[in-house]
Length: 325
Image 1 (cartoon, rainbow, N blue to C red):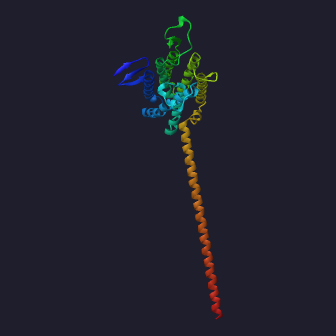
Image 2 (cartoon, helix red, strand yellow):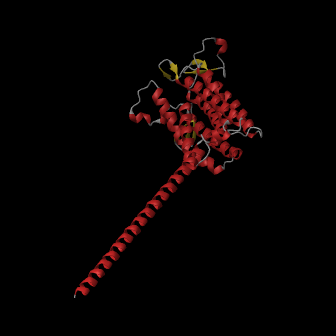
Image 3 (spheres, rainbow, N blue to C red):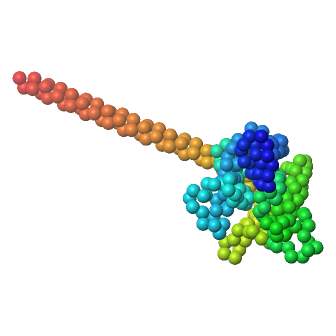
């Protein structure tokens, strides 16, 4: 029934890779933690489970597309779908997952920052656990190590008999520390402003990934630029911008201005606008109907007056004819 090998184990005859199993475990734990944290932003467990139905599939698709686009391998159409052969990129998963959160918030009219605050600790926890899978998949390693004094785990690890920096281990530890920080802040009574936790995630993860990516030996490139390092810097900039915006708007008492930028409020405002337009059109139709009725009454009145005038004229003509006789 069971059999354990270098990169996979057998379960009732099925070949299950450690990497895939660990990624699945990371997703499950991430959803579990998010459900437990839902109450800290006024959400329910059901909200997060439904959100996960949007996020997880799109995260997998995003991770695969990201890798296929920036990999130096020329994939055939059929190979693109063979995710079991390897080839996933976590930042692509983050992008796909973010799109999933946006869709969820638009459809179910939830606030993007609230959901983002709850998702952030779960996301960085999932990333930490996922990096453990990189050890079994022999991926996401650093540059080659030539100094014998540095050839020891966890500083370095052997990939195909060659020592490399254990960058997957560095990121795992960094993300675990980030998870602890975000969880403490989320549960701290003084940190209630929406968007804060999500912003700090972007800064913490972005900073760690930008530094660690510089040590990577198997990075994805666009030209001479490491794509993940570039995107990590973008994440830091976005995180700082949102954090500063939240702080300034809160301090000035204009947080509603920021809330109006969020999906739930945007959808609500669009509903109000649509309702106002509907009422306006209804009023215009009623006015047109009233105008038509007034014109109809006026026309009927004119016809009635014309008929009365005709009758009077005919009566007068008959009277004259009678006098002549």
